Every structure is written in C-alpha cells, then in structure tokens.
Image 1 (tube, rainbow, N blue to C red):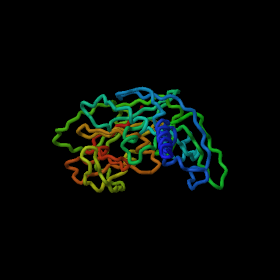
Image 2 (tube, one colour; image 1 turned 90 degrees about the vertical axis):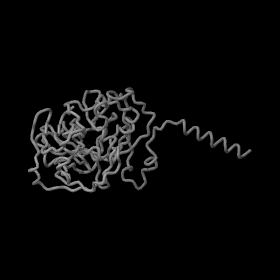
Image 3 (tube, rainbow, N blue to C red; image 1 turned 180 degrees about the vertical axis):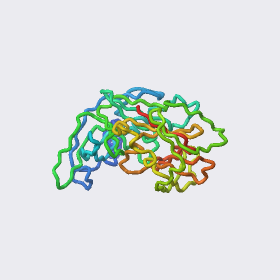
Image 4 (cartoon, helix red, strand yellow; image 1 turned 135 degrees about the vertical axis):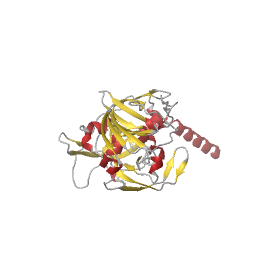
Length: 352
C-alpha cells in the first residue's frame, strides 16, 4: 500500500511540473542566491512592466508572441552612452533577465520574399519598434548564426551590479526593454517594444550569377544610403594586418580547411567620419556585403563596429586571390562560414 501511495505522489508531482508555465529564468541561473559566490546576484531585482509584442513581416505565421511558452535568460551589461559632445557617459552596471530574441523568433518560421532566387537566410534582418515609433535593428545572423547566442533579450527584470567600496544609485527603468549585451555603447536599448518586423534586404538589386567564369573582384565600392563614398583597392594594404585562426564551418558542407584569415580591420579601411550621426547608425544601421556574383550577407552596424568584446571584422586577402577576388569579409564572431562573402565587390551601408 505504501508503494502505491508513493507512486501516486510521484506521478501527481510530475504532472504538476509539466503543467507549470516556464516563467522563471533557466536552470543555469535559477539557483543563485544573494549570499552566493556570484557578484552579479548580490542585489534585488526590479520587475519591469511587460506589454504585448507582435511579430510581422516575412514569416509564415505572423502574430502575437505568447510569453508563457518561454524560459527567461540572463545577461550582464555595463551600460554607457554618448552625450551631445560625443563623450562616453557611464550609466550603470546591470543584470537583466528576460526573453531571448533567439527563443522568441525561433517559432516564427522565416518566409523570405526572395527565396526563389536567393535561399540562404543571411540577407535577413529585423526591425524592433516601440510605442513611440523609435526603432533598433539587428541582423538575423547576430540572433541565430553567432558564436554566442542569447545576448539580445527583452528584459523584464533589472538589478544593479554594485561595487564593494562605493555607494551607487544606478537608474532603473519602469517598462520592459530591448537589451543587447554584445554592444559596447548603448545604441540599441529600446523601451517598451511592441513590434518586430522581419525583412529581407531590398535596398538594391544584386543579380545572382552562379555560372560566373571570372569571379575576381579587384576593388570594393563603398555605398552609404545609396551614395558612392569611396573605393577600397589593393593599394590600401599598407595598414597593419590582423590574423585570425579559424575553424571554418558552413551550413551546407560543414568543415572547410581554411585555418587562417589575414587582412585589415574593416574599421581601419572605412573611416568612421563617413557617418556623422554615429548614435543613429549604432541603433538602426545595417550593412550589406555583396560579392561580384550577387552573393550577399547582412550585418548590423553595431555588430561590426560597436562590440563589447572588441572583436573586429576584417577584409581578408585569400591565398588564391586570382580565383576568389582580392577581398572577402571575415568576422570571427560568426558561427557559419556562409557569412564570409568572397570576391567582395560592394559594401552597402543603410539606415532603417
């Protein structure tokens, strides 16, 4: 009789756990205490007011996000911003918990409007808007194809990370907000998001030519908002070169034996003074890298130039430049080799 009773208790408890909504943070963080070893978890968190969120655009099943379906994740971020003079102003250090964009968007199946001519999901980006019409942008790749996912969240709780020897009073928001823990400077914080729009790059047409015999591109043209700005040619290689070791892995064919990429930092080749309102570019700027054969990828401006980890993309020079063009974009933060366009012909900056 005791064995039967215990079995009933176990089954009842198990069923109860299945019926509970996963509205807590993930198991990796839920065990931390205010008195534990973690310096991130020594302060109480404040709950932010949560609103409704719609996903629209190029997805099969647009509609309202059901938050009850997801666990929460945590990020840690030292928040800073630019003032009117361009100087960096420290805001505070925070622990945020909330819903990862990776998780929220995973169930909204991508339906690209150009998939009949260009199937890879690498020319896609998202626009997040709030109730005031403000917006921030992210590439699809920095959500789904990055080495370190779940760093972009919609925060529903906030807690300061306080130093030991100094009393601080970091400000706390009232509404849930987009937080990108990958960003060095606060460019993509957006309070009270209400809509996510999924888009494919369509600012310019790049003809796809998979049968191109001569795929060599001897220069790279730089466009900003549809205006020609400069040309990057091989004689630009007087700048110091950066070398990255690589485990190059593609979406389709897997591992490619290209152990090293060597080239010049993209930021060195493209002067930042070309972009007058840097804060706006960090918030909603995007960059399309297009090869001479029409192959293209999308990065966000902050993904390239505003990284907390200081990892910089390069224009790499292939060993066989006569076959693959003089330049290719390489970003060591990308998981997939597909983000590395070879025979690079154009870099197209644009704002959403």
